Length: 282
Image (cartoon, rainbow, N blue to C red; front, side, top):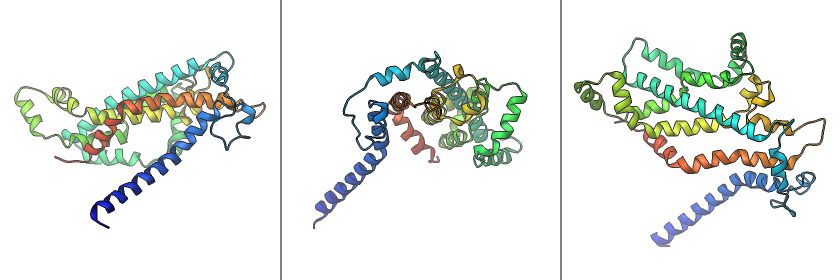
């Protein structure tokens, strides 16, 4: 077998394996979308069928009506508010902290950087109770502050990601800017920020994903249904004391994925650019 045939066969095998893995990963989403159009009583009876025998689009209407007069319009607005504000705060302040660690020499910089990195190793279950006690003492329970305000102190993963990106920027640019009369703040906004947009966009996409899908934090801190995000509102469909409307539940779950899918397809190139470049050093 000559080289060209081997190369062609290798590509065929690679593409075949990729298609198989893609089908495996997409199957749960496709099954959920198909179940959103089934009769609620037939969702698990015909679970082996992806497409329903009879299409019930009214599941989306029933699901959107929500509960106790609260429609999913309210839940989507809550999720969008929490996700947008926390994402903006986390990206802005993570970039500021990353710039400080990368470019500013201050006392104890290495120690604070190590402490910051160590916080990435703490599981949420370890800090959940102390945070609840602290936020309860501040009177923030049943408000959005526990969900949003911590993001304004920076996110360790985003700080590290942006730091790696800043390190690829030659320090000569900073020195040239200082000769032109720029101070530290001016250098950050005029020189650094325009160059780290790919890393910031990558962090913003990840932040949007994580905040939109967050279930545990709203469950802990929110008590009023009118303040629930979509992730927590979907839980209300499952009631052990009554019959669960599975069709409406899967319909709203399918709609809840649309913002994430849209964000991914619009900004996917920033994910590749931000991650691939952040590992380089100039």
